Image (cartoon, rainbow, N blue to C red):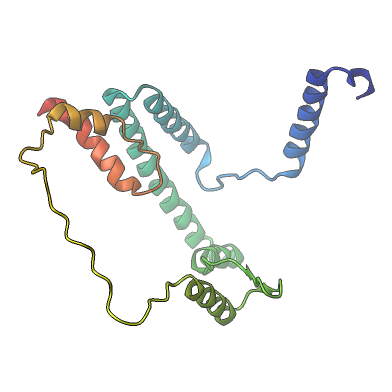
Length: 203
Protein backbone atom coordinates (compact mmCIF):
# COMPACT_ATOMS: atom_id res chain seq x y z
CA UNK A 1 0.00 0.00 0.00
CA UNK A 2 2.91 2.34 0.65
CA UNK A 3 4.01 2.09 -3.00
CA UNK A 4 0.70 3.49 -4.23
CA UNK A 5 -0.37 5.73 -1.35
CA UNK A 6 -0.55 8.75 -3.66
CA UNK A 7 -2.42 6.97 -6.47
CA UNK A 8 -6.11 6.50 -5.69
CA UNK A 9 -6.62 4.15 -8.65
CA UNK A 10 -3.84 1.83 -7.49
CA UNK A 11 -5.21 1.89 -3.95
CA UNK A 12 -8.67 0.98 -5.17
CA UNK A 13 -7.33 -1.83 -7.39
CA UNK A 14 -5.32 -3.25 -4.49
CA UNK A 15 -8.34 -3.10 -2.19
CA UNK A 16 -10.58 -4.72 -4.82
CA UNK A 17 -8.11 -7.56 -5.42
CA UNK A 18 -7.87 -8.30 -1.70
CA UNK A 19 -11.63 -8.02 -1.31
CA UNK A 20 -12.35 -10.45 -4.16
CA UNK A 21 -9.72 -12.88 -2.88
CA UNK A 22 -11.33 -12.83 0.58
CA UNK A 23 -14.77 -13.41 -0.97
CA UNK A 24 -13.54 -16.40 -2.98
CA UNK A 25 -11.91 -17.88 0.11
CA UNK A 26 -14.60 -17.29 2.72
CA UNK A 27 -17.97 -17.28 0.95
CA UNK A 28 -19.26 -20.79 0.16
CA UNK A 29 -20.48 -21.31 -3.37
CA UNK A 30 -23.79 -23.02 -4.00
CA UNK A 31 -23.49 -26.23 -5.97
CA UNK A 32 -26.22 -28.06 -7.82
CA UNK A 33 -25.69 -31.56 -6.47
CA UNK A 34 -28.55 -33.18 -8.36
CA UNK A 35 -28.38 -31.53 -11.75
CA UNK A 36 -25.12 -33.06 -12.95
CA UNK A 37 -22.92 -31.96 -15.84
CA UNK A 38 -25.55 -32.76 -18.47
CA UNK A 39 -27.91 -30.22 -16.94
CA UNK A 40 -25.48 -27.34 -16.66
CA UNK A 41 -25.21 -26.61 -20.40
CA UNK A 42 -29.00 -26.28 -21.00
CA UNK A 43 -29.27 -24.17 -17.85
CA UNK A 44 -26.51 -21.86 -19.08
CA UNK A 45 -28.14 -21.68 -22.51
CA UNK A 46 -31.45 -20.74 -20.91
CA UNK A 47 -29.78 -17.97 -18.90
CA UNK A 48 -28.04 -16.63 -22.01
CA UNK A 49 -31.31 -16.75 -23.97
CA UNK A 50 -33.02 -14.73 -21.23
CA UNK A 51 -30.21 -12.16 -21.26
CA UNK A 52 -30.44 -11.81 -25.05
CA UNK A 53 -34.20 -11.33 -24.83
CA UNK A 54 -33.84 -8.65 -22.13
CA UNK A 55 -31.29 -6.85 -24.33
CA UNK A 56 -33.21 -7.01 -27.61
CA UNK A 57 -36.88 -7.34 -26.54
CA UNK A 58 -37.50 -9.21 -29.77
CA UNK A 59 -40.27 -11.77 -30.15
CA UNK A 60 -37.99 -14.37 -31.72
CA UNK A 61 -35.55 -14.13 -28.80
CA UNK A 62 -38.45 -14.60 -26.39
CA UNK A 63 -39.58 -17.73 -28.22
CA UNK A 64 -36.02 -19.09 -28.10
CA UNK A 65 -35.93 -18.44 -24.36
CA UNK A 66 -39.26 -20.24 -23.88
CA UNK A 67 -37.94 -23.29 -25.73
CA UNK A 68 -34.77 -23.33 -23.62
CA UNK A 69 -36.75 -22.79 -20.42
CA UNK A 70 -39.16 -25.64 -21.18
CA UNK A 71 -36.30 -27.98 -22.05
CA UNK A 72 -34.47 -27.14 -18.81
CA UNK A 73 -37.65 -27.77 -16.83
CA UNK A 74 -38.13 -31.13 -18.56
CA UNK A 75 -34.51 -32.07 -17.93
CA UNK A 76 -34.50 -31.05 -14.25
CA UNK A 77 -37.65 -33.07 -13.61
CA UNK A 78 -36.07 -36.07 -15.30
CA UNK A 79 -32.85 -35.71 -13.30
CA UNK A 80 -34.75 -35.27 -10.05
CA UNK A 81 -36.77 -38.40 -10.73
CA UNK A 82 -33.59 -40.38 -11.48
CA UNK A 83 -31.92 -39.02 -8.33
CA UNK A 84 -34.87 -39.97 -6.13
CA UNK A 85 -34.98 -43.42 -7.75
CA UNK A 86 -31.29 -43.98 -6.97
CA UNK A 87 -31.87 -42.95 -3.33
CA UNK A 88 -34.79 -45.37 -3.08
CA UNK A 89 -32.71 -48.20 -4.52
CA UNK A 90 -29.91 -47.51 -2.00
CA UNK A 91 -32.25 -47.03 0.96
CA UNK A 92 -31.43 -50.41 2.53
CA UNK A 93 -27.68 -50.13 2.03
CA UNK A 94 -27.53 -46.41 2.85
CA UNK A 95 -30.55 -45.43 4.99
CA UNK A 96 -28.87 -42.25 6.22
CA UNK A 97 -28.90 -40.79 2.71
CA UNK A 98 -32.58 -41.65 2.37
CA UNK A 99 -33.62 -40.07 5.66
CA UNK A 100 -31.43 -37.02 5.03
CA UNK A 101 -33.26 -36.42 1.75
CA UNK A 102 -36.66 -36.95 3.42
CA UNK A 103 -35.72 -34.49 6.16
CA UNK A 104 -34.63 -31.89 3.60
CA UNK A 105 -38.03 -32.13 1.89
CA UNK A 106 -40.24 -32.27 4.99
CA UNK A 107 -38.51 -29.71 7.20
CA UNK A 108 -40.76 -26.75 7.89
CA UNK A 109 -39.18 -23.34 7.72
CA UNK A 110 -40.68 -20.33 9.42
CA UNK A 111 -41.41 -17.55 6.97
CA UNK A 112 -41.23 -14.98 9.79
CA UNK A 113 -37.70 -14.48 11.13
CA UNK A 114 -36.81 -13.65 14.70
CA UNK A 115 -37.94 -10.18 15.74
CA UNK A 116 -36.39 -7.60 18.04
CA UNK A 117 -38.62 -5.94 20.59
CA UNK A 118 -38.41 -2.15 20.15
CA UNK A 119 -39.08 -1.63 23.87
CA UNK A 120 -36.46 -3.94 25.36
CA UNK A 121 -34.22 -4.81 22.41
CA UNK A 122 -34.75 -8.48 23.23
CA UNK A 123 -34.64 -11.11 20.49
CA UNK A 124 -38.13 -12.65 20.05
CA UNK A 125 -38.13 -16.18 18.60
CA UNK A 126 -41.27 -17.88 19.99
CA UNK A 127 -44.37 -18.12 17.80
CA UNK A 128 -46.70 -16.65 20.43
CA UNK A 129 -44.31 -13.82 21.32
CA UNK A 130 -43.79 -12.92 17.65
CA UNK A 131 -47.56 -12.93 17.03
CA UNK A 132 -48.15 -10.62 20.01
CA UNK A 133 -45.35 -8.27 18.91
CA UNK A 134 -46.70 -8.05 15.35
CA UNK A 135 -50.24 -7.54 16.67
CA UNK A 136 -49.01 -4.71 18.89
CA UNK A 137 -47.16 -3.10 15.98
CA UNK A 138 -50.02 -3.25 13.47
CA UNK A 139 -52.62 -2.14 16.01
CA UNK A 140 -50.50 0.95 16.70
CA UNK A 141 -50.87 2.17 13.11
CA UNK A 142 -54.64 1.82 12.96
CA UNK A 143 -56.57 5.07 12.56
CA UNK A 144 -58.80 5.89 15.50
CA UNK A 145 -62.08 7.05 14.00
CA UNK A 146 -63.80 9.87 15.90
CA UNK A 147 -67.26 9.12 17.34
CA UNK A 148 -70.32 10.10 15.36
CA UNK A 149 -71.22 9.88 11.70
CA UNK A 150 -68.65 9.77 8.97
CA UNK A 151 -68.45 13.19 7.28
CA UNK A 152 -69.80 13.30 3.76
CA UNK A 153 -67.95 14.80 0.83
CA UNK A 154 -69.61 17.73 -0.90
CA UNK A 155 -71.32 16.93 -4.17
CA UNK A 156 -69.18 17.83 -7.17
CA UNK A 157 -70.80 19.23 -10.28
CA UNK A 158 -69.35 17.64 -13.41
CA UNK A 159 -68.65 20.14 -16.16
CA UNK A 160 -67.06 17.83 -18.75
CA UNK A 161 -68.60 14.60 -19.97
CA UNK A 162 -66.31 11.85 -21.25
CA UNK A 163 -68.08 10.76 -24.41
CA UNK A 164 -65.30 8.91 -26.22
CA UNK A 165 -62.23 7.01 -25.05
CA UNK A 166 -59.64 6.71 -27.80
CA UNK A 167 -57.48 3.59 -27.26
CA UNK A 168 -55.88 2.23 -30.40
CA UNK A 169 -54.18 -1.11 -31.01
CA UNK A 170 -50.84 0.65 -31.42
CA UNK A 171 -51.16 2.24 -27.98
CA UNK A 172 -51.85 -1.15 -26.36
CA UNK A 173 -49.01 -2.73 -28.35
CA UNK A 174 -46.49 -0.13 -27.14
CA UNK A 175 -47.60 -0.49 -23.52
CA UNK A 176 -47.26 -4.28 -23.65
CA UNK A 177 -43.92 -3.98 -25.42
CA UNK A 178 -42.48 -1.91 -22.58
CA UNK A 179 -43.57 -4.29 -19.81
CA UNK A 180 -40.75 -5.47 -17.58
CA UNK A 181 -41.23 -9.24 -17.32
CA UNK A 182 -38.55 -9.56 -14.62
CA UNK A 183 -40.49 -7.38 -12.17
CA UNK A 184 -41.49 -9.31 -9.07
CA UNK A 185 -44.90 -7.74 -8.53
CA UNK A 186 -47.55 -9.81 -10.38
CA UNK A 187 -44.80 -11.43 -12.43
CA UNK A 188 -47.03 -14.19 -13.84
CA UNK A 189 -49.54 -11.66 -15.13
CA UNK A 190 -46.77 -9.52 -16.59
CA UNK A 191 -45.30 -12.46 -18.50
CA UNK A 192 -48.78 -13.41 -19.75
CA UNK A 193 -49.45 -9.86 -20.96
CA UNK A 194 -46.04 -9.74 -22.61
CA UNK A 195 -46.78 -13.00 -24.44
CA UNK A 196 -50.04 -11.42 -25.62
CA UNK A 197 -47.94 -8.60 -27.05
CA UNK A 198 -45.88 -11.20 -28.96
CA UNK A 199 -49.05 -12.51 -30.62
CA UNK A 200 -50.62 -9.12 -31.46
CA UNK A 201 -48.84 -8.69 -34.84
CA UNK A 202 -50.30 -12.02 -35.97
CA UNK A 203 -53.91 -11.07 -35.18
